[in-house]
Image (tube, rainbow, N blue to C red; front, side, top):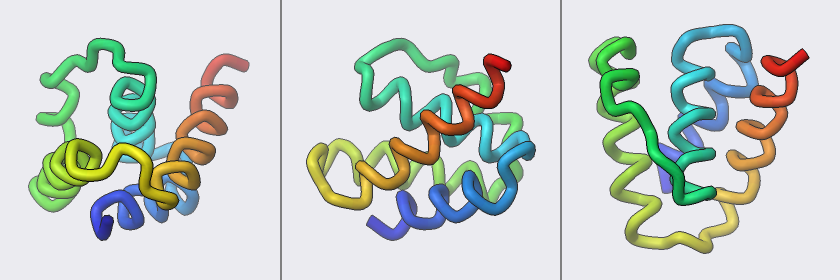
Length: 84
């Protein structure tokens, strides 16, 4: 679950960044089983693009891993801030 932890750090430390927004959207779509615009991944630099791909792989492997809960909380926080 290395990618999930990397994305969580980005979401928490760079809350207003494009990467944080995209990671939050990705995590929320995976958790809520909703559509995600894959084109958004191309807005990431290559390193973060690789992290996003790894998140998808990790999520598929273990949908109920404890780290997922932490990143989901971070993603929900970003979503709430963006709505205000």
